[in-house]
Length: 334
Image 1 (cartoon, rainbow, N blue to C red):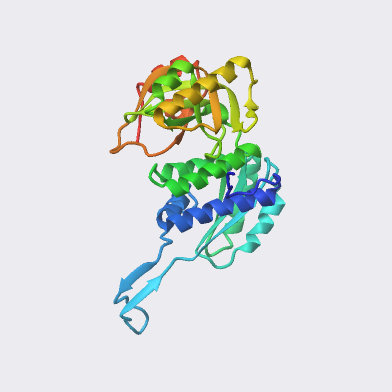
Image 2 (spheres, rainbow, N blue to C red):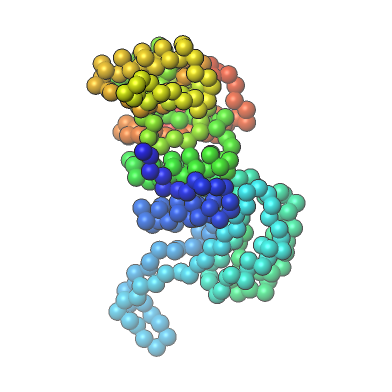
């Protein structure tokens, strides 16, 4: 059974907040450097912010020169989470009392969508007036669950296995609770050197049902340092082999005799590579189109990876999968 890192009981704000804080705490525990890089990359703090411990020798102070000092800049982040753009200016303004005399202060408003522009302008105007009375101003950062996920994905690489698994589970939670509703633009790259020919021929990809899963409409098949094929998902079916036969469950699309036959083919073909497919998730695509979306950094990819195709291709709307495949041939990734 898959063990989740994040609660999935309901979608109340306190659970969304707790899960996001757990994600950030896991990132900090995994790499404090990457945690602080996240804070800087999302403009939570300016370039002068140096949150990590500073070791100094012979630092002059008033009346003495100690042999060494260890110091750290003070900072505080206050988070207000909503399930939609329901932020109230009066509530946000009351949150400012949570700050003390920290040098760096950030109020984060977090929701599935960005704050309404008019509401943002009104609050920031009021915040600017408040900051005139403060020694150290409060910065307001409005962000989304999607952007936090993307920012962490940009910081970690495919060798950060533990953190990648945590992030995948967080994204899975967000998709299930509708905190991120963008599967239409997501491609998940999957490693499949051994089964590539079968996958492309049968327009089918599979992996273990207990593997981390986040919603995505496209699958990219990776081998030889490149995504070699892309397909748009039309059905997802799980198949669990029991003593009495195969139990099927449709997560997307319908269970048909044709798809059952495809699953049977995969089970037989998998034996050629030593795979025993007893409890798998099968992704049926309309068609896999050949492409060549190359990894240009050193070394091959060691695990799956999520791509936002609108960002990769620099477009707002995605064309037909065949055209996406052609456009990807002109792009590279690290």
